[in-house]
Image 1 (spheres, helix red, strand yellow):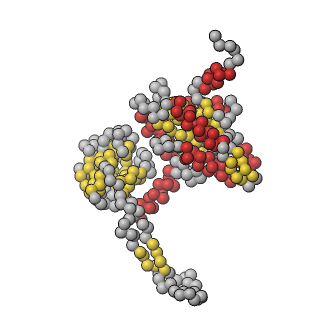
Image 2: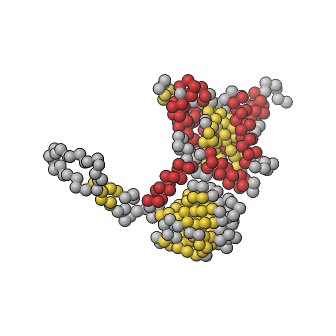
Image 3: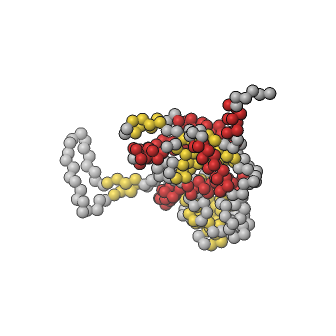
Length: 328
């Protein structure tokens, strides 16, 4: 619970209407601080405050958290200075401890190397070139840092992860896809959005973006990562999903956006979107290859009339379905 502040010497009314003198604006008002409640939520957080994955946060409640470069780690930090299994943090009652797991570059607490140490609120855990802050949940510093993390990682208009955070998630998922884990990607772009901005103004455009972002948030499931890439373009990472399932997801999202009716100053506006969907292929080398493939399908959706989902082979399937020639 955050600390609460109450002015001293507030007059009691007791049913009488009494004129309360206005405080002198040049005089400092006295405040009484009420301490946090004894049943404050238990637990703590680990927040990356420097280096790769800036802003990444993991909750510490009742389970150990392994930190390292390996995909099996509960807090994966993909950086060459971090060992595959670098260190582990775990709770014992209301106390928290950290131990090094034989890492190459050691685990440091406030610049001192450790093998095993108890963590105190505000401690900095350094693993390679990455600095992670340990914070008791709901402490003043925790609340401040959470606000700063939100500013650095969340798109303020749509409340989706911003481009930088989404790209970091993309790199993480691509590294897993390169090891054989299925991964699909959907690029989503609003149709004729520039027309809305030009005709109705940017405030109207903002309302449309917020409505579409809300539809995206309602459509994505746990483990899927949506983000705003910029302007009217969004992207969704779909881990552990084959292409057919990703296309169904994209079609659900497209239909959901088409069903939106956004109330603007000039009346209710209908919105549509075009979506390009691809799956990671063994021949791809980098995340840039993956994004270019999704962008190509998105471009094709625009070229073929908009308000549709395109994916590799979709045009051939459509041609086969509409082919007037008799089949043998």
